[in-house]
Amino acid sequence: MMLSRVADRIYWMSRQMERAENMARILGVTSNLVLFASPGSQEKNLHAPLSITDSEEMFFERHDKLTLATLIDFLALDQKNPSSIYSCLKWARENAHAVRWQITSEMWETLNATWLELKGFKRKEIVDGDATRFFDWVKDRSHLFRGVTYGTIVRGEAFNFSRLGTHLERADNTARILDVKYHILLPRVEDVGGALDYYQWAALLRSVSSFETYRALYRDQIFPIKVAQLLILERRMPRSLAACFNQVCEALDRIEGQGDQAAQRLAHELLVRLTYADIEEIFQGGVHEYLEEVLTDIDTLGARIQRAYLGTV
Image 1 (cartoon, rainbow, N blue to C red):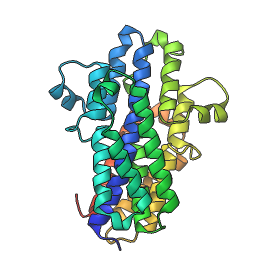
Image 2: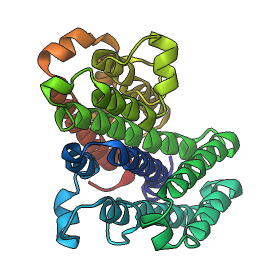
Image 3: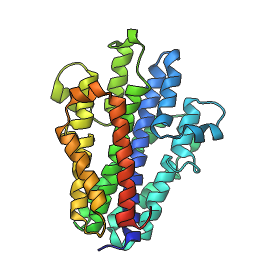
Image 4: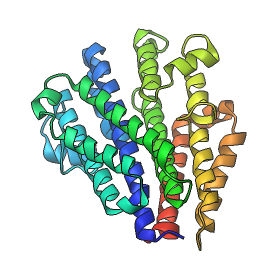
C-alpha cells in the first residue's frame, strides 16, 4: 500500500493539471463569448467563470471592476488565487518534485518544462494581447502530461491515484460548466432558439471538446436536452459525468485501502444513478437542482477519498 502522503501528492498533481486545462477552456470560451456578445449579455458572460469556480468574492476583494482583462489576470495569472492556472501549474510541479521516485522521468520533465515555459510568458501579452495562444498552450501541455503519464507509468498505485484525481476533477468541471449555462446564462425568452442561444450552447460544447462529438451522435441542431444527455449520461463522451465516474470507480476498485468503503460506496452509487438516469426525468426535476446534487456528492466523495487514502480531511 502506498504511503498516504505520496498518494496525496500524486492525486493532487493530476487534479491540478486537469484544473489548469479546465480553467484555460473556460477562459477561452468566455473570451469568445464576450467578443461576440451583445452589451447586455457581456456582464453575464464575465460573471460565469467566477460562478463556475466559486471565486466571485475573492475576485472583488482584489479587483474593483470586472472586465475581460481583470478576469484573465485573476483566473490565469494571480499567484494568490489557488485555482489560477499559474497556481495549478506551480503546485502540480511541486507535488511531482516531492514524489519523483514514484513517477516516470518523462512525467517530471513534462511538468518541469511546463513551469519553465510558463515563466517565459509576459503578463501583458496574455491579459492585453493574444490570450488564446496562452490558453491553447496550457491545453497542449495538459494533453502532453496526460499522454506521457498514460504511456509511461507502471499500472500500480501511482497510476490509480493519478487517474482518480484527473477524472474526479473533470467530473466536477463538467457539472459546473453545464450548471452555469442552465442557471446563469439562460437567455431571455425571446432569445431561446436564436443565434445567441445557439452560440452559447456551441461554446459550451467546445469548452469540453464535444462539439464534433455532438454532431456525430445527433446530426442535427443543438438542443439543450441533447447537450445534457451528452454531458451527463453518454459514456462514449470522455468528459461526461457518466464516463468520468466510470473511471473513478475503476481506479477506486484497484486501490487497496483500509476504511475506504464509504468512498467506494458513494462512487458506485453515483455511477449507478448516472447509468440508469433518464434525461427527461432530469429535465422535469430541474437540471440545476440535479447538478447541484451531483456537485455536493462530488465534494463529499473528495472528502471521503482524502480521509480513506490521503491522510487528510
